[in-house]
Length: 476
Ligand SMILES: Cc1cc2nc3c(=O)[nH]c(=O)nc-3n(C[C@H](O)[C@H](O)[C@H](O)COP(=O)(O)OP(=O)(O)OC[C@H]3O[C@@H](n4cnc5c(N)ncnc54)[C@H](O)[C@@H]3O)c2cc1C
Image 1 (tube, rainbow, N blue to C red):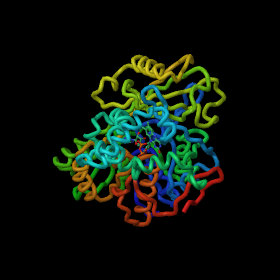
Image 2: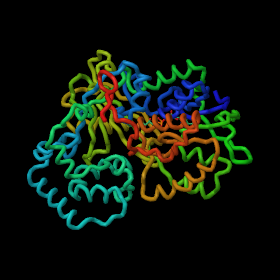
Image 3: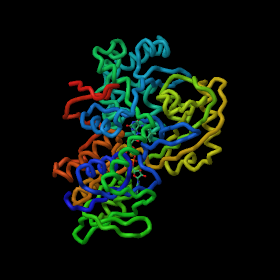
Image 4: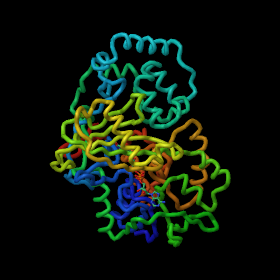
């Protein structure tokens, strides 16, 4: 359409959405993907004749344009899942979101009184605001509830104490939630059907990866290209600093007028010829956290009812357990067995990251048995999947490190950084989809969206909507 030669690095939700929107509007693109499949962290694996995602992947958005695009791609090939998630703590399973009667029963009256005292003493004498995650949660819920429901899980996820974690994480993920709202929520029933729908989510019949397989087919049908198993080494710039192409890992140079990158921001910036030492120094302070997924093939079908469980229990290393049996029957394919996955989060330098498959299987087996969730069910087999650099770490000081990097990247013409890796944002797939949509609009219509300002806590400026069995329902 514009005659511009456009390359996209990464075929995850951000890169593929951009490719999908551009191709649909007549602009051909070339997508370079390091792995041998599309979908990025949203791919679906075939394991023991069943389909599983990389941990729990619930698609949920209230943004009309994101939901419309999702439905355009998925069509009618989805079902609604009833969400059931609980928190595992001190050998007990708490309903999530918290329900007052349930929490009261499981914590015991004494702990509830202590928690309330702790909450009121926080109101009377608020903690020092050091802009940390710990401050953010404690000032809203009190220290005791912070310790029971937030501390251990967050420290497992991020690998740093909660007072070293930036409040951004809480602001984005626990946004606008306070004890009074939690209590109100716990005692009241949703007033209209749309609130009820929030406890359901749409899930593709062939797993989350199906969305991106379908996008791939649509992109190829429009004449664009997707090069799998073709990692990009570096983005190239001309003598004026404008992007003029990229180098693939085999050393070949490919000329382009525009590049959209969803490869890790840290790796991309370090290779940019015009990045100054100061920018490279700043980017080297940004960290990503890795995930190890230990899949267990377990005999039997009715182990426990949750889609996934948050493991707040400090005595075990695992952080989350997903039970794929409780999503939709289509992915279980009549099997008599269940697939669970246990998540372990770590840095490159942690022993667990380099542990053998055998060691990880033993660890996961010991920990899942400890929860009592398996009762007597036998573990038949295991499979380990390692995902490097999947969580951008919002440690205190990350914003100061990121700021000069963003300033520099804004000065590089023809380069768009999108996605969770690519823009160093703790995106869910809907946020990465949105970044892809907006990047395409900038290219097609000069829309002028500031992609660095697409935050995970953005408010939809469009009509609100949810995906129901019958399609899209507008909620406001
Ligand atoms: C355990 C887990 C659970 C999650 N649960 C949910 C959930 O419930 N709901 C939800 O919405 N989201 C969830 N997410 C987040 C979701 O997976 C991500 O938000 C989404 O995949 C981000 O898309 P992306 O395109 O930005 O990045 P990615 O999916 O990471 O895609 C980036 C792509 O770039 C490729 N790439 C990297 N480097 C290069 C290179 N040099 N050259 C070429 N290609 C390269 C990668 O191989 C990858 O395919 C979860 C993530 C994890 C890890």
